[in-house]
Length: 90
Image 1 (cartoon, rainbow, N blue to C red):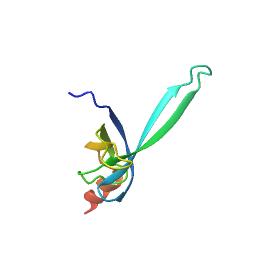
Image 2 (cartoon, rainbow, N blue to C red):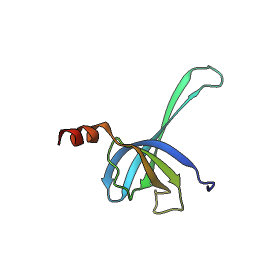
Image 3 (tube, rainbow, N blue to C red):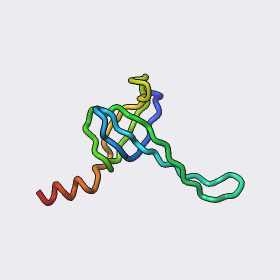
Image 4 (spheres, rainbow, N blue to C red):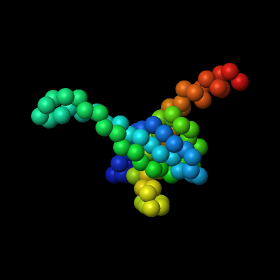
């Protein structure tokens, strides 16, 4: 296993060729006020697997692929619910 960071998030856009935007949510408790804080960060990731919007994916840190891409989609953890419904109907 390598020392590369791995993050799990949801695909929010797949309009580019071989690139998806993955939103990674992070929930933590504020150190002083003890309030639960939600934050999210968006990463551009290289996609060879053909992810759809709403898929939950695992992304892995990589060498720079382009100006904004430094992550690669390693696996699709969970398909989007919309796609599962379409498959069941058809």
